[in-house]
Picture 1 (cartoon, rainbow, N blue to C red):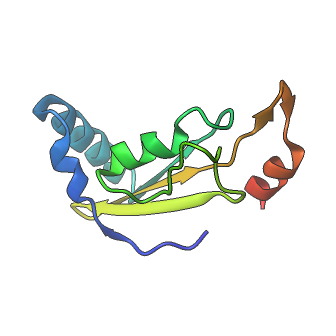
Picture 2 (picture 1 turned 90 degrees about the vertical axis):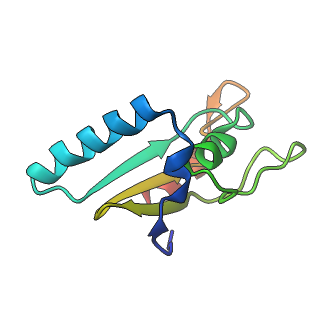
Length: 110
């Protein structure tokens, strides 16, 4: 799950109020000596997890295909803003046909 950390240019796409709240939240975390935040996006296969991550980042960073549910491995995307790093991990589908996909779960664990 390697990743090159780049500036979070997609941050500018958010409404001003959302930008302000995110900046406040990141500042609170930095006051607690936390310089990064990791968010894990998980759920059923084919429900738009990759598209959600692409929207949050503001770039096409995770491959999306209407005919393929998703990749087999978790993907981590990292971006920085004002000295703070956000890591977003998108997982393969954890539930298939009503059952937990244990292979996907093991890949996420690691």
